[in-house]
Amino acid sequence: MRRIILASASERRKELLRQLIGTEFSIHISSYKEDIVEGLSPVELVMHHSVEKAVDVSHNCSDGIIIAADTVIVCKNEILGKPVDDYHARAMLRRISGQRIQAVSGLTVMNASGGEKMTESELTHVWMREIPERLINDYVSTGETQGKAGAFAIQGKGAIFVERIEGDFFNVVGLPLFRLSLMLEQFGINILSLYK
Image 1: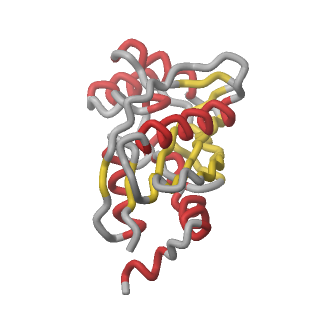
Image 2 (image 1 turned 90 degrees about the vertical axis):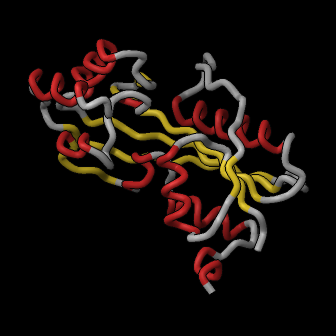
């Protein structure tokens, strides 16, 4: 089996990749800084970030298939990153309250030895309930908002704010598994054959 390398420090992405491939893989954390690049749409931005992460990790890996991803939450065409503190988290939750938001991911799969790479994007629509101020305060006090794009975790307690979604649930968590499986097939990796 070809070595698989996840270019991420995200625990959520580690769990999702383990769920998908059911085998060991390496973690190589990218040193690339995810700054906003002026003039890029949210889709273009996350694709750009995922490419840069993969390329950065490839400099330290001579072989293997690198998987890199970047996910943002978009509300009314504004990118919402990760809150810097509890005050910022409350402001984000007020902003997404009652709104249809989008989880947008860029995903890059790269052959470390040959340099061939493929980059695609995934978009999931998420309808949020109206969130009362008391629930915003209660949720922020759980600590779950920190480190989460849009200040909520659909796979955690933040699920109580999500009325419905359209698209890939796993994309909202941070790694679109359906899209990833198709991309890995293009690199000769059949997910189910890994279990034989």
